[in-house]
Image (spheres, rainbow, N blue to C red):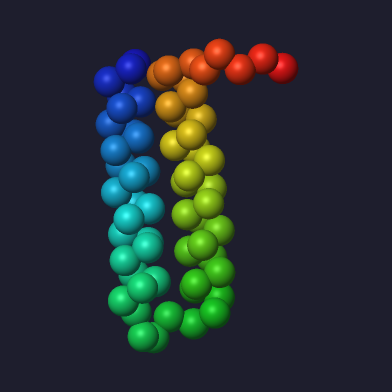
Length: 62
């Protein structure tokens, strides 16, 4: 399972980079595409953080 989470984490990182590159290099992206891509990137960042927390639990308390 840990190997699978690592692979997913790498895929999420790659997808976030592709979204970032697309938004920086695209002259034809409209506002809806930019907004949707930004939202997706934020969700992927949260997902990556959750995966890393599962792999390496922090010492934080609630």
